[in-house]
Length: 222
Image (cartoon, rainbow, N blue to C red; front, side, top):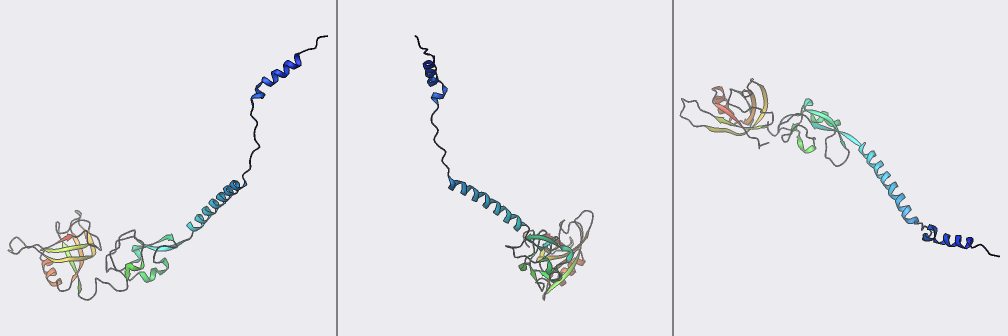
């Protein structure tokens, strides 16, 4: 009796099929140290973010200057505003000290947008003390530059009339602009008050009354 060879053939076919070409897969190796490190990094990042958020809210009120204040001039409440800053790292003047600041004097020329620090103020004016005088000038077109502001430094120059034989000369090398009045529509004339040495003020007043004086700005001097 003939026996069937089909099972043997099926077995051979099974050995030659796709399953016979699969490589054995080693068991997956667990790495608990790496997993723990990943968790620590995630927790550390979350903690750092939380600290940054908390510190960003830790701010205090300080004083910022909104108008130019010349050296030796008084601080006014209109020229100051409250601003929030970080609580550390800046030698700021607290907004709670506003009453002490108003009425004191600027030790240096302070530009708008400057955060006020203790070194910028003084109880007494360094410009309006003994030996100084304030002089008012009524200037005509062409006798002063446009855009002069309080706190600017200027030269006062004697400009003789055409009939005079005298030469032009500097009367004050570095006068402080103490106040600026309304200017004409051209923007080149108006009234200003300057601080000069008291010894030079009589001569400056005399030339100013006769219209023989001009103002030159010193942009680099503050």
